[in-house]
Image (tube, rainbow, N blue to C red; front, top):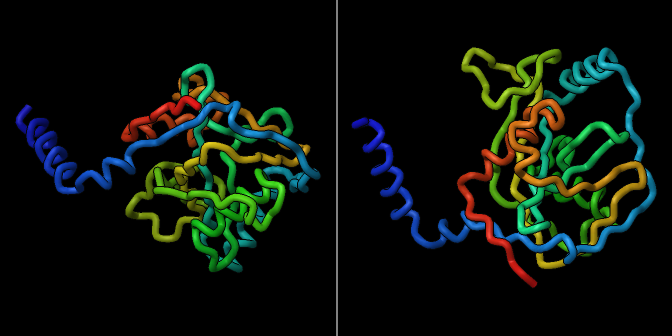
Length: 221
C-alpha cells in the first residue's frame, strides 16, 4: 500500500509542475459526425500478395532502407453522445487506422499528413486543410519478419524490423473527408473497439486504453 500512495503523490506533483498548459493538451474536443462532409474519389491501388510475398518484400525493403516505420492516426468524432473512432475498412473485412509507411528520411508528422491527405482528402498535397498531428500515443514493434507487432521492444532485440507509431489527430469543427472508392470510412464506438482483438486486432482494440489519460469533451454545435 505504501508504494501505491507514493506513486499517487509523485503523479500529483508531476501534474502540478506541468501547469495548465499540459492540462489543456490532455483534453480532446470532439465534434458531431454531422459536422463533416464525406465524399469519394478514385480508387487507390493495393498490393495483392500472399503472406510469403509480404515477408519477402519486407526483407527486401529492410535490406535497402533498414527499419520500416509506419504512422497511424487516432481520430475521434461524436455520435449518439459517445466518442467514435474513425477507421478505414479494406475489402469489407480488414480494419485499419488511417496512415501508412514513411518514406526514407521523412518525419513522422510530414509522413502522417501525407498519408491522411492521400486517403482522406480531395488533394494529396494536403493544402485544403492542415492536419493537426498531436502527441504520440504509443509504439508497436515487430521483432522479426514473421512475428506479430508487440507494444514493447525487449532489450535483447537490437535490430527490430518494423515500428508502428500512433498519433492523436485533433479535428477542427468541420472539414471534408474524401475517401478512395475502394475504402470505407467508418465511425466505430470506442466501447465496441475496446479489447475487441478478434474484430479489430491488437493495435486498434488497445486505442481506448491509450486515450484514458485524456478528458474527451463533446462540443455541441
